[in-house]
Image 1 (cartoon, one colour):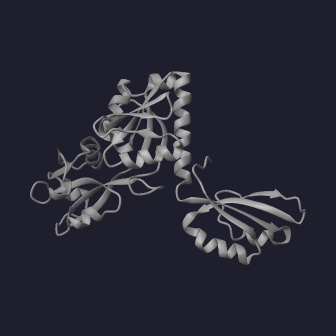
Image 2 (image 1 turned 135 degrees about the vertical axis):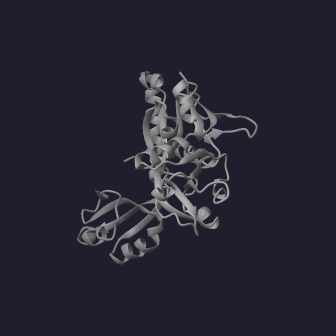
Image 3 (image 1 turned 120 degrees about the vertical axis):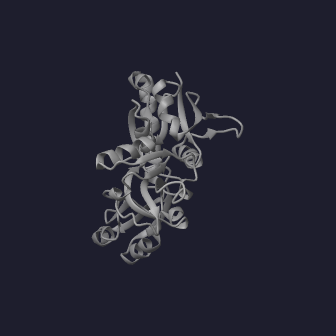
Length: 290
């Protein structure tokens, strides 16, 4: 029994393949092929544009795919949402925004100010629904790319995706409102999802990918401490949940194991030492399953 997994081709491709690697599934690509193999003989991959992923998952060409919530909503197709993966091409723990933007020096301040104007975007259906819900008549035109350069000559406003807003600012555009917040999502074909063997494989894939995301940017800490100093040590630790505390061969001591953000280790470890912790070990994490 094999499953075919769709990996988003383009800006998310490298970040997704790296995520698979951290999850324990190595993906082997060929620069001239849209097909990829893995170190799991039951999983093959195919590189597909995120915009088209839901179509091929719904049709059954793919058992499971990774794409954005934005493109799922845009497609309007019937797929099974498996799990949200909060990562993008730059970082962990965040998604992207589709925003309504206009030229910096324009008089448009609200969506209502764009009545009977032209709005350019790749996300046509979502944008139309957004303006319909507001009762604002606009002409939504599909943009084939370079959307930021359309205003003011080719469009009055745009709806464009952004992570930081830097590209919009560089093109002298001002954000009026967020149209949609989106993140990466694992989706499955309904028939594949109803097959117990395939569903188990898909669930395991989602679990491992989620664990790899949870581990990114975090490290584990192990340390020993006298029981009389345990309260002071625990007050220092920003634990993921509650730290694990285990007894040692010496009844006066305990071992503490926890997870912290890697960026905080610089400050936390000296404070632990000052609280009389000993044998402090920082170690990398591959996956955190919560």
